[in-house]
Image (cartoon, rainbow, N blue to C red; front, side, top):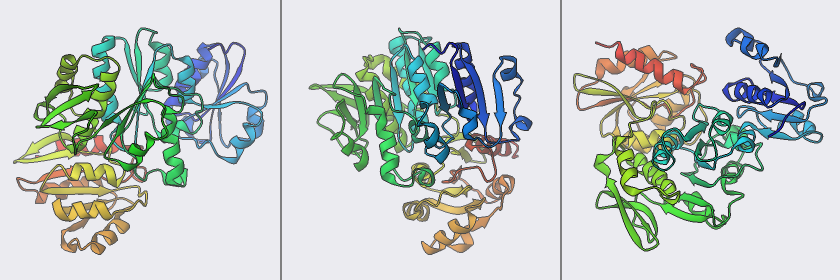
Length: 454
């Protein structure tokens, strides 16, 4: 991609924006990085950018910023459909950082998307792909924390890219194409931005928009939304199911993960041999195995990689065991559906939930809470609604504790009341922005507090 002497505006000075700006500069562009946050310079060191002769503009963006621009790259956190961008798009091409990455890529891209399970599946798929392409020839990036454009620029044509893709990243993407993709599930999330489930699902489906039968699409047969996508895709379809045997696809049979494909049954490994536990991780493993298998993976090597794969940070991550009580960090459960997966894993739970409320339905969440949660500790903005919903669903009021905006108080109270065989589980079912910069900071704070317990 030649950007010599082109004027490129990058909107959003997060991790993706920084990476896109630096790469555009390396490709010869005259680059401006703009962020609406006037005080960004107080939190982030911008000297690296200015040293590269990248102009940084902070504060509210206006049309004047885009005068003479040849290309605009917007970060995932920036909504594409703001009125300003609609006007700008009449004169200049606007693309996402993910689309920019795709245009830089020399290697095929395998994408993972869905509402829940993306990070674990992406990380596992990366390990499985290394059995095909080699340890140093696989790039893993996207919504997972490493900007996708960096990995696409780094990996050569003999490797592959594994990308975690969010709906936000797809908003300003029209050309983004994948060699293969997996869509894990679709449940209500990010509706404050996307407005409707239909729009949210449409953004997810962009990962197979350019597919032909030469491309692979892995879909969750147990999810009605993803199963229906097969009717719109031109891809070669492989379903997976954790609940039933399939005529063709990946499933569990006699506690073994198996893939049935073109009349042959391939046994991968026993569920009990996996380090990642829980029904949701069986789904994640089936999805990753399916995509790697279709990409040419050897089943014996894939089995070895799967058995060696350790739990991902912030996903039902065991932190410490004290007097027979294990503490688990599931901070990445930023919606009720993700929390439900964790809650379903344990029979006796002291649950720490709450945070920045997404106002998603809580009926299924409280059905599981009533069944498995011995005590409910609430934190953050969501406390009021979560308590009201708990009482509405007949959860005992004397089992609810309000810890305010203090994770330390939540952890200390959990430690005070916990007894084996209970577990203490941080699975918030909410975003973190009322108390933390992100779910990672929330999870690490929880782990720090747990590790300080005696």
